[in-house]
Each structure stands twice: as structure tokens, then as C-alpha cells.
Amino acid sequence: MFQTSAPGKIILFGEHAVVYGRPALAVPVTQVQAVAQVEEDPALPGLWLDAPDIGLSGLLEDLLKQAAPSPLAIAIRSVCQAVGVETPPRLRVTVSSSIPLASGLGSGAAVSVALFRALSAALHNPLPDERVNQLAYEIEKLHHGTPSGIDNTVITYARPVYFVRGEAIQTFRAAAPFTLLIGDTGIAAPTRQSVGDLRRLWQADPPRWETVFDQVAALVREARQAIETGQSLRLGPLMDENHRLLQQMTVSCPELDRLVEAARRAGALGAKLSGGGRGGNMIAQVTPDSAQAVRQALLQAGARQVWQTHLSPEESGGV
Image (cartoon, rainbow, N blue to C red; front, side, top):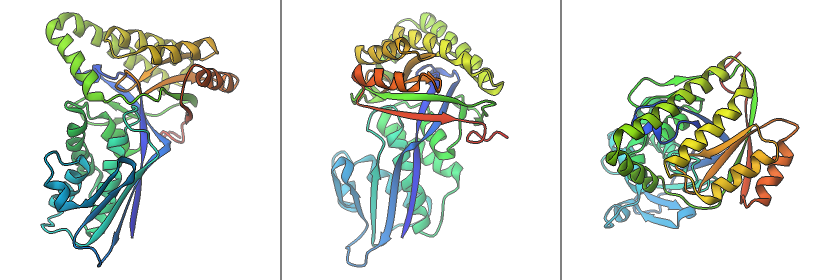
């Protein structure tokens, strides 16, 4: 049996603007994970997929014949093609995840990455990270239409990433620790819709939105500098400003704004939506003294779940 897992992710700064060539910062979230398990089963007529979280089960060849094949089935086919296997053996592939769907935590990319690693290993040709990342990006297109590529990159490498679309991957290091709370609105928010709506706004008035994206880029660069120099207290105000710009992009929603405001009132250093918006998650920077009060405020303001994630020099590849 082969089993692999992949973490979730959150975007710290730069979502949406990253689609237009600006940088973004993102970090893995190991508190939630996708898991793929592959085992031989001679009793099966072919490769069988079980994905109970989304109610999907069946033979790969049947799933691929459907009018709109699941991205998971297409992902399995792409792995087989990548390792040169024309007829998949009798395997049972089981995929599960503790990452909420359509929440901005990278559920689709995490499932893809875990699946690619487990299945390629079971087919005796483990794929290198670069190839896993490439294949995961192709599946992200099925989920999101015009994805930035940041989800699959952060999750594949499981490291904090400074990401610019089309440029070489850069990991970054935190010189001092900082803590974030992630508040889940409980609202499924497919990224494809918010990305598409913003694109239509941009097409109608490119100069206006290019200026907004430039402002986001400046925040991203300042945030990276703050993290790398150990000045993490600067991050909160930058989050507040990034959220204001995301509101201008029309990708926030009343539920996200309510959680962001509740976190600020309860003592968070700053807060913003994270990911596609219009639901999904928000993040708040907290101190050890304010973490519990902010957590309670988020739950009282309607958060379905609250996770805590911590970025330290050790966890980000620092010394």
C-alpha cells in the first residue's frame, strides 16, 4: 500500500492581483491535509476510485466516459500518461481530505498532489516535485479556469513561497515567529466565479485595476521584507490595507467583512480575507495574549471553524 498526504495552504498577501503578474505570499497549513491511498486489489476489474468526501466512486474507465468527467478521474489518467502506463492495473485509489471544499485552503490542489505522489509511487515511477507541480496546475485549471498557480506550488513544496506567475519559485524565511488564526465562513466559494468577475471588471477599465494591482504588489513586497527581517508586527496593518483593496475588487462579502472586523475589535493586529473570497476563509494576525479572545470573537461572529497556524524560522526553512 502507498499512502501520501499534502497540506492545505493560505495566501497571506496578493490574491487575485497574482493572476495579473503581481507577487503573492502564501504558506502551507499542516493542520489540515489531503490523503491519498493506493493498494492492489486483484478482485477489481480495473482501477477503482473512491472519494467519499465528494460522493464519487467507480471504475476509472467509466468515470472518464461521463459527459463531464471529475477532475480526480482526469488527474489519475494524467498520472498514468506521465509514467507511461496505458492500461492502469487493478488498484483501489482512495482519496480523503480534512480541508474544507471551496474555502481558500487549497483543497483541490492538495488532493491532486497527494494523489499524484501515491499513484506514481504505486506505478513504480515516483514523480519529482517539479512534475507533480506541473500536473497539479493542469488540474487546477479544471477547478478554477484561470488559476494563478500559487496553490499547487505552495502545496507541492510545502514551504512558504513568494510567487510571481511565470517566474522561478522563491521560498522565503521568517526571521521571527508569528501566529495566524484562520476563520472559516462556512460558505463554499468557488474561485472560478470571483476570478472571472474581476477579469470582466479589468477588461472594462484596465488602467484603474492595474493601479489597484500595483498597490497590492507594493504591500506584498513590504510584507516579505517584514517577515524576512523579523518585523512581523508590521504585517497586521498591511493585512488591513490588502483587505480594503480586495473589497474594491468586489471579492469580499458581508460574512468575511464581519469576521475581519470582529477580529480587529478583539485585538488582532490585522485581518483580511484569504483566497478567492466571497466566502471561504479570512486570516488574522494575533499575539499569544490576544489569540484566545480573537478566536472567541470569530466564533461569536459566525465562523464555522477557527484554525491556528504558526510560522517560525524552523518551519519556514530558517536557521
